[in-house]
View 1 (cartoon, helix red, strand yellow):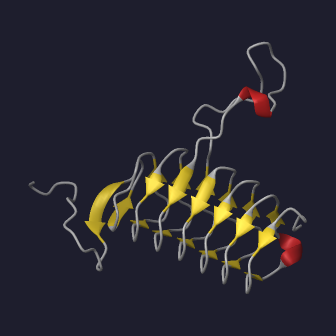
View 2: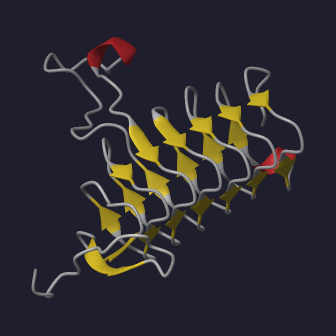
Length: 168
């Protein structure tokens, strides 16, 4: 379902419009969206992004231009999720605050990675498949693991990035 509240720029490609759930978000020019993707309200997707199938992009996430999202990538926006209040009532929007997450331009996130609320993934960074990102990722860093740590640097990195295990 694509809600009428979605702002679609020119040349956005949604491969199977009946097999996505998009509402209240904005999607930039030339972006491609695969099947079984959900993008929630107030998410902002830049231009020329690629979002692979089964990805979940929740409220509060911003993807800058040229970002790649692999299959099954999961974003979160609440570090302490709960279904009910202290009184046992179902939570409403008033019971929690969205923690924003930003993925800077040309970053890539591998399949089945999980991105926790409140992090920034730097420009040109690469998140390995299955990684769990719990803190900010420097620009042009390659991170992997649970929790994700810097294991290398992008081949087009303009500056030196310290890799785990390297001497300073």
